Amino acid sequence: MTETAIASPVDHVSAPTRIAGAEQLAADIKSEIRQVTSDRIENLGVVLTGTHVILEGFCSTFHAFQLAQHAAMRIVEDLMIVDNQIEVC
Figure (cartoon, rainbow, N blue to C red):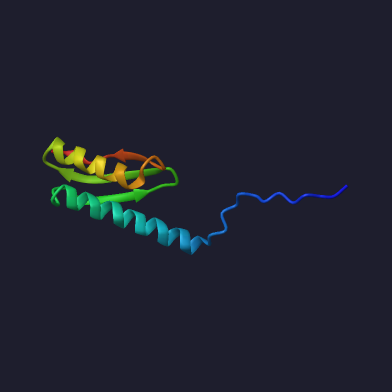
């Protein structure tokens, strides 16, 4: 019998490349949120976990809150869950 090698779906991207990619994704999300909300989110923070995008900060309207949510969702599409922890005060 002959042996067949099965290619595994292992990600061959190095850790520094993945970190740089995550940092770029966070920067892209932050930039998009600032643009669509006209910079109405104070202390905007974007935290990436393995499966979630966590939005942090403060705003004065639910409209800005919702705009931030949808901007992040547009960037990550269905690849990650967006957890909007922006406080409306």
